[in-house]
Length: 105
Image: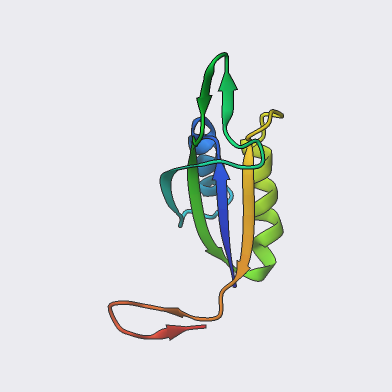
């Protein structure tokens, strides 16, 4: 299993979530976050915005679904401008069900 963490533009969040649901991936966690990437913020005239709003979407998927989910996220969140976001994929060793304490492999 893999954990996918996608930092995307807030205005693209609904489009990505609906596309994931339509593709059979209804389970996810999302939260608003602030940060900066390589561009180190944004300069608009004399005003510098150090951190920009993003939406973090986290999912755990089977290894065989990673490419499908990542491609869908990239397709639905891309605007073509700097700051579209990043997607990180990490291995998940074990998960636990809180209610029962059961380890799920």
